[in-house]
Image (spheres, rainbow, N blue to C red):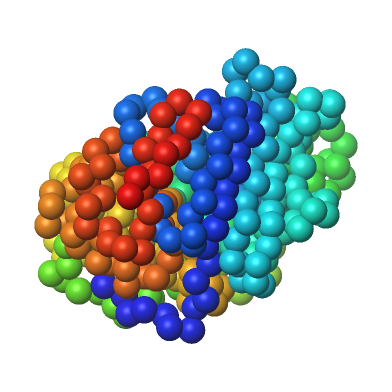
Length: 384
């Protein structure tokens, strides 16, 4: 367990309103800034509520869905998520959504009734971390899944990271297109590779910094006998190794030269073969000194949960505010002792937590600082 950061301000949603979002034509939750437990049958829309909350942060939310897929099936194609909160800067009202009149398929973002440039502005008011069942195969799945998971961790402490990753991916696509065309002016390739190298170093450096900080926090607070085992994490790849052995400027020059040398191979492969888009996050079960992918399914879930909770602590330490913690169907897979241990850790964390589960009995030990809602299709009833 990680010691509570008493300097961190608690951030909490006090009211959430959804309009034409997924299966919720018009849903309002009054939370009173308490922890929130959502119960109800499968398909009732519990995860949809967590997804709506997750859109109040940079990125595409916990399902990474297209914005057009978020609209109610029999609605007009628009949707909105609106929240009142006690945030990092005090009380605020933030919202996001789409309008059927918008042709580009983008979404609008507002803070206190005024339009803002994008969801990155929400980070001034709150940060959000989450764990969903779709992440259960993180340690055994492809490296791309772990990179996306890592980028989500970085984004929670560095709201500019998403823009850097997007810019880097655009640069890669431009380089790949020039290589595919074959007869492109080498000066064009030089220019795009200069930009690609600069962005690549920025992406890799942000990832390295977050991994280093998170690994340090875990090492500082680890307890071998904890219910949720501590993780040992490291970021591996050609670029990370070169940044570690020298300066970022030297690594940028090396990568730019590497891109030039690999033009022939990359043209044949149809893609850029080296860079931060090929890096991987390695995770080990600390107490067992075993690679996470070789652990049992139960051990992997406990390890992942411990890692996400440690990351929530890091966000609080670096931002000075506790993040919202979204846990989808987590308690149902824990035995009573581990569930009690989870609630104790969450209480110590001090953050507002949103949980889902089909069985209301799983939330009996959450305590008076929590509110329970029974969710049915498009409705939510508060349970006393």
